[in-house]
Length: 193
Image 1 (cartoon, rainbow, N blue to C red):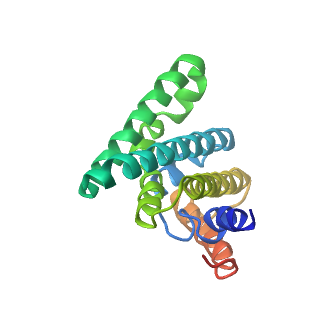
Image 2: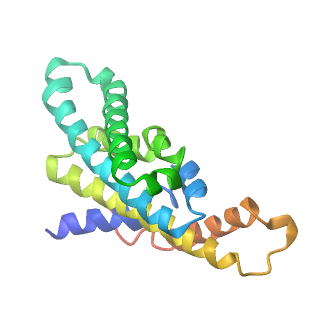
């Protein structure tokens, strides 16, 4: 149990895909303008990442490896992720149209988000078992949600700050992301896997 807790914390904080490996920055900068949208996007990415990682694990373990088709791993993982995102988009459009309108194009970008693809690929490369794959996916999703929520909170506070004209918008956002990345790098080495 302790090993899974370490893996969860390492996936969420010390190996955070956004702030230590700089993956998924499109959604990170695009959605983090609004805290409510960021919370919803964090939950959506976490759920898609977890479900697609588990299905990708099953496809890789029970279909691709026994048939010697590991070279089709990326293609099959991309198809699985795109299917989940399409399903999520239809559900949100029907049951939460305000959230659907708030996310806009970024909902579709979950399908092309490299974090969502990085987790199943990492699980496959490390030959992770089912529970390890689940914990890594949940931890990575929690790390993405933590990063985007922190960024949204800071960006909302900056609306009331006196930011120099040349840094308004994306300029100050990059500075904030750099400061967040530095704070997360401070945790590196605490948990080694």
